[in-house]
Length: 148
Image 1 (tube, rainbow, N blue to C red):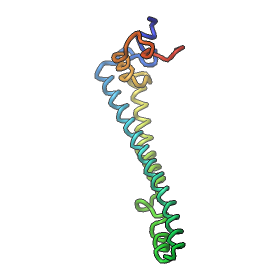
Image 2: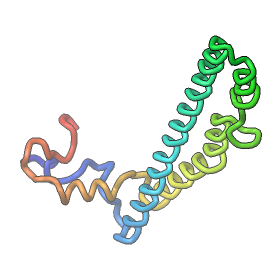
Image 3: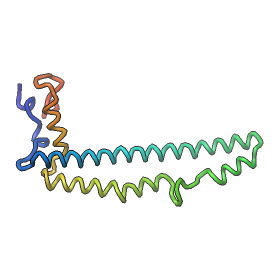
Image 4: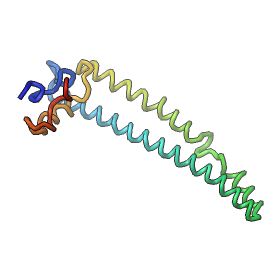
């Protein structure tokens, strides 16, 4: 068994002086940031679904007109097609506001704290879990990718 099978690569080893409480705090901070990534993905889903619905409304307007329902088509077109989803905002503006107000500052803060407390080494808690949970000696449970 070579040394890469026994421990993680240097980028994922806990630096000297990083205690267990700090390691857990950094893991919690990372997990919180990962949760914002999921939330951001949901915002993009919301954005794409709402945009798709708006284009589908265009089809509905066309079909209403073809069926002779001009008044209803005009109401949908005037009042719903292209409508703001919240006052003054289309969905892309919600994503932009989320990114600039919350996501980017959070990402920067997490990076700064990882730099300050762990020398920029990310995912230390996960790397420790990998070391604990993998089956040492198993070819599909190696500590690092081949050639590392």
